[in-house]
Image 1 (cartoon, rainbow, N blue to C red):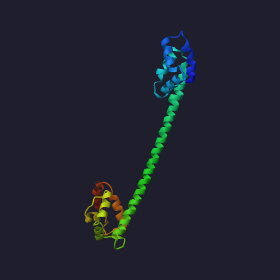
Image 2 (image 1 turned 120 degrees about the horizontal axis):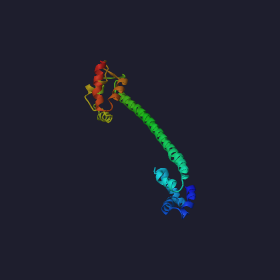
Image 3 (image 1 turned 90 degrees about the horizontal axis):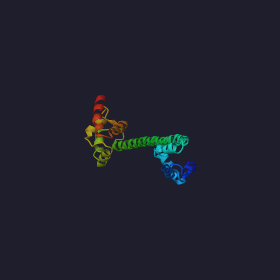
Amino acid sequence: AIFLCQMLHDFITDEGADLATRTWVNDKYGSGNKALYTFFEITFSGGWPTHASKVVKDVHPFYAVFFIVYVTLVVFGMIRIISALFLSETLQQANHDAEIMVLHNSQKSKRLKREISELFDVADTSADGLLSFKELDDLLSHPKVLAWLAELGINPMATNVLFDLLVDGDGMVDKDQFVKGISKLKGEARSQDLIPMAADCQR
């Protein structure tokens, strides 16, 4: 900006040059502050032809070399590089956020299975590692258990329906079946509609 301001000074003070052109050049490049603001517009507004064309056509064609170099290296070069760096940083941050989300979901899943396992231990009053229909029925008689299942997205249902979903043909439910079954039931009600069909197919 300072270089062009100095170069155009003689043209601005040349009384033999066209007054309108001199006035325009003075408004755009007549001082360091004006030239700096003009180059700000050239660099970031995308309207560089408006500020360069008149200088090249009405002052001297030599300035075309200056503007070609500046626009190529700065406007189309460095600005694109800076934009690419910002984009790269954004993508890296998005990937990092995705990794954090996966880790969070994994930890949440482990915590849920641990809580379901603890619930099984509470329900298994016989301490034989198996859950009978009566033990499950007793468990579902507690309002806190029903409320906890509702928070998981599992609609409270009759004991016999839930037992049929969890049991694997031997009339008893072990801890692994209980944990996996409750984990699968967690979520949308649509899952509960599909699991009975899967259980029937397995039998």
